[in-house]
Amino acid sequence: MTDGSPSSTNPFAVVPIADKARDYERAKAILQGTQRMLRTLDFESLSEITLASGRRADVLALRRNGEIWIVEIKSSVADFRADQKWPEYREYCDALLFAVAPDFPVGILPSEVGLILADAYAGELVRPPPAHPLAAARRKALTLSIARAAAMRLHARIDPSLSIDEV
Image (cartoon, rainbow, N blue to C red; front, side):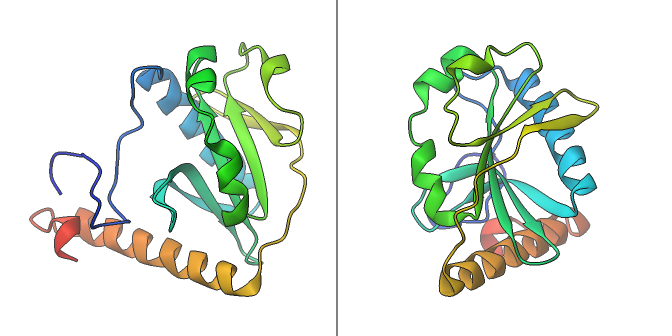
């Protein structure tokens, strides 16, 4: 895929974080700080991962011990209000979190998820996420999906003539 559009046939396609309610540049900054913070917690992460449900998680993070977190980035109040699909992500992770900019009105976010405050430089875990452990079969399927998505993205970077759809 070369145009960055979602692909119904490729669950590993890289899709830009953009929609009408989302401030793309702000979301990109939150993503960068969030991924930096996740590394300090021993997670490696990928952005825009399509799940088996067809939904795309903003960030899917895998810890060395196999723990999986999903982080939903909210760049504005309008972005949060426009997106009510976030509860569906619980069945695909051990913990669910929101990541927002430091000036976001966090009082509107649900308290039953973790909270990260992030900018382009760093992130801070201000509310740990409640754990809801995955079933072993779901964990294995997600771990394989993460590995395949990372390998496909790396291969596409190494060989720019390769479309991810071709992998």
